[in-house]
Length: 60
Image (cartoon, rainbow, N blue to C red; front, side, top):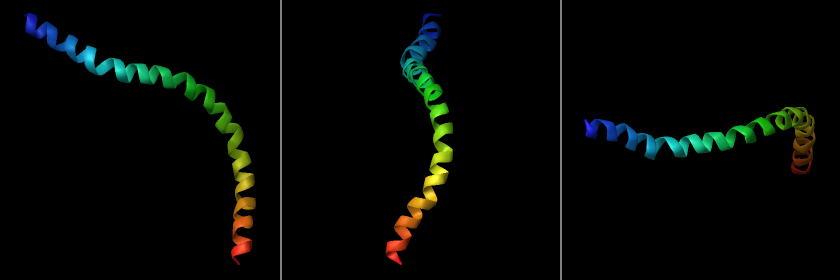
């Protein structure tokens, strides 16, 4: 009985906290970055043709 009780405890103690802590730490960062990415996406779409033109014209 003691062995069966120790095995899940060891698995939870070793495997779960690193993944759980990393996920918990990344969630607020992801929620903070999501609106920034939504604001930057149209800017990148506007700047990409300009950047491509600046790189393509000197090569031609």
